[in-house]
Amino acid sequence: MTAQEQRLTDLAARDGTQPLIVIASNRGPFSFTPKDDEITVKRGSGGLVTALGALAERHEVLWVAAALSKTDRQWVEQNQDQVQNVEGVLLRLVRAPKARYEQYYNVIANPLLWFIQHQLWDIPRTPSITAETWKAWRNGYVAVNKLFAEVIADSVKDAHRPVIIFPQDYHLYLVPRFLRELLGDGVQIQPFIHIPWPGPDAWRVLPKEIRLLILQSLLASDRIGFQTQRDAFNFVQCARFYVPDAHSRGSRDTVYYQDRTVHAKAYPISIDIEKLEEMAEEPQTRLLKAQMINFIGDNKLILRVDRIEPSKNILRGLEAFREMLDNHPEHHGRVQMVALLVPSRMEVSEYQDYLREIMAQAGLINAEYSDDYWEPVRILVGENYHRAIASMQLYDVLLVNPIADGMNLVAKEGVLVNQHDGVLLLSEHAGAFYELGDDALIVSPFDVYSTAEAMHQALTMPAAERQRRAEALREKVRGAGVRSWFHHQVEDAMRALNHQARNASTS
Ligand code: ADQ
Image (cartoon, rainbow, N blue to C red; front, top):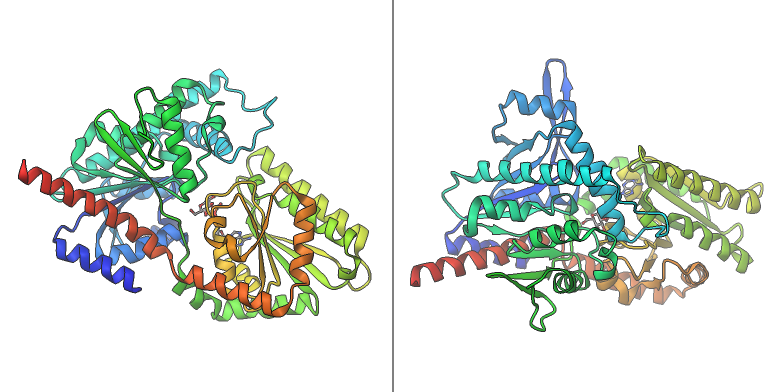
């Protein structure tokens, strides 16, 4: 435990007000699989789950998530829709009717909200808000958010102690307002938004009614967490522009709306430092690392690790690599690009097309430049976290060039585990830029030429400079892990609860 985390724990203990912490997210912390006649439970591996593990040691934590699979639904039925203690975490799954869930997830949350917030439009053609979209909004997104709020309210009604609710991300924007209607002002509501929050112009593609409902709902919170100050500032601007009677009174991080003062605050997410360092030494990682060393040979390694997702800008990354080979032939036969890509949303045709284009682009580069001994690009598709961590230890250059990204954890994982004084090439539009920008080489994700030049600069950078940058980056990442990310949020909510309690006792 870091000194900071210890201080936060002590603070909570001194207060004597151990709250019930509620996390609400679309995807839950456990996956359920059928085995013989039983259902077995496996803990997920995301950062949120990790942060929760540490939190659950000190607080009572209730996690409310959607039942996603058939087995999830069976588990809910077996437990009669009640809260269950699973490995020390109280868990309740929300069973939304399948058709409504489809509309919420596959029509509104992912194709519409995600695309708006990453600004991925081909604006003359998309988005097209049709009758189907409106139906999906009302019957899907609104209904599932309402159901989430009802399940949360039902689960905390007998808590008899302070309650802090953390709805996660763009799936649950309407939960704060429904919760406020159901639970009143006595609970702290503090959503966290993992993806970028763009300025007012990006939101103009949404119909006024939908835009307003989202903003008004978020303004029913006590505090809203964002990855960066820029996102928080953009939210304040959106509230000022689009919500009648919302004011910021010159503030960059506070909105005054109706009787409420709502803080927009940056809590930059991070990684589980201890777990990653352990994992880097595991036998499976060592084996995959040896394989990768064998594959790279004497070449320098340019690595990228991403979900197959247009916002990650994988195609322009390949174009830049090609341009670097064009402009700097001295790297021929001496550099290997490896892209580790996890399939994502493969049921969506745009994502399938994106993967096809990536494979075609890599094929063209290889066709043009390969010789008997050298194939410049290797794309490995599949989810293998050990392989990702093994490869991150070896890179000379890590390419992180998203068009837009809330944070980008790969940048932080990479600089933590890398053993080659590797250079980080980082997009100015990744949230990580605000923490790591000083010691990375910064690229504009659209500027293929400059990205190619930055690759060349990284490959030819003097050893002393590489070492200085890599050490500075590692230091920064080590300074703030995912546990403190959550603790800061809990600390702010607890402070507000204490303040509320003091006001109530003096009035
Ligand atoms: P993502 O965009 O999914 O989520 P990102 O920060 O890129 O998140 O992290 C992805 C995770 O998946 C990392 O831990 C990475 O190592 C792992 N991963 C990616 N490709 C992999 C591969 N090929 N094999 C194995 N593992 C792989 C959202 C936002 C981000 C934000 C996070 C957390 O879009 O901006 O940082 O949430 O808030």
